[in-house]
Image (cartoon, rainbow, N blue to C red; front, side):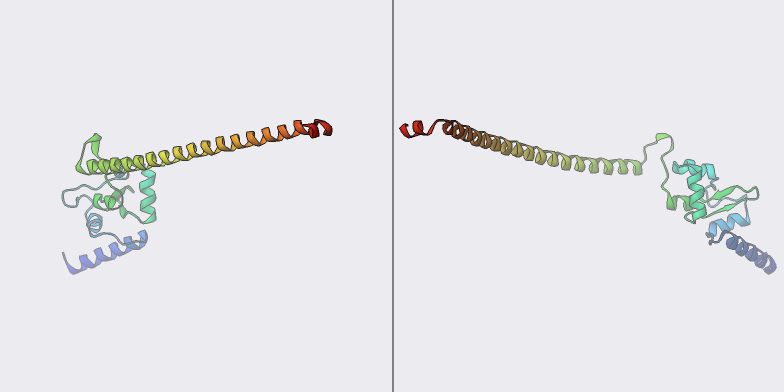
Length: 171
């Protein structure tokens, strides 16, 4: 390459960066220079492929691109080209066809441990609530017996007061 070609390429890259209003990664610069080339051994994702790779909708990926969370460029046909490393920097990949990977196993194990801890906490809370309920029932029964005893004393006092005064004196 001649110096003039490098300068022209740099100007085109700068215009593209200004149009996208964010810097591009070096790999995406290479893709912009050579749209048919792949970066390393990985292929560039289209918008649909990227959505499938992370298990989300196309609109979610497009919103991430427009918000600047994920860098991407448009090819000559106006299709988004997303580098897998850039996409997976923000969104974790999903296992293909239910394949059991080490990452999914670790996540499932961590999730199971968290669920067991939460279950143990809930059981403890349930036992505490049951003991509080039993205490409240005991208090209710004591208050009920006390109220019934007070009611009996009042009815006894009213029946005694209903007798004439001379019978109360005579005894």
